[in-house]
Image (tube, rainbow, N blue to C red; front, side):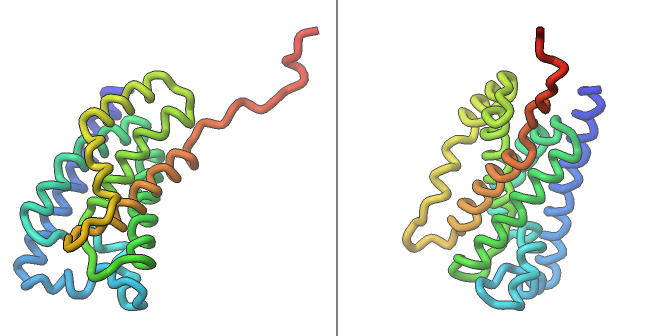
Length: 194
């Protein structure tokens, strides 16, 4: 079961990354036409569709490469919980990041780094919400490997990197972990010992 889920997860996340690269080359071939039409444009109605499409777009090879490996690793680890949980974690991170940028962003914004931050914080927070020792151990390993990305939620003067996407993506991951936390078994009076 786990081996099948791992194969499916690797394939699914691999396809997602392949789509990012395909969109990158399509955008390049069209002279960045997609960026002009599908980026998040903060506080403008025409920029709302960017919430959905901006994570698919990247400004250059270094930008896309910096998101590729973390997306593969963190997406794969999140997928091991199952496709439904992966979809909720991915979708919540994607949406909250984009909405936060649309509300508070400073300019045209593209890239999947908000999603990366969301998957990172989802993997960190879920074990604590679930009180699951294995998930907490995975969180520790993820934190050791990628914890330094948390500096990206802080504003940097003169930078064109969207700290808003990072911050709201990270919040989206925590929200996803909260939504997906395992509920305690309901109280049943017939279980009481007499």
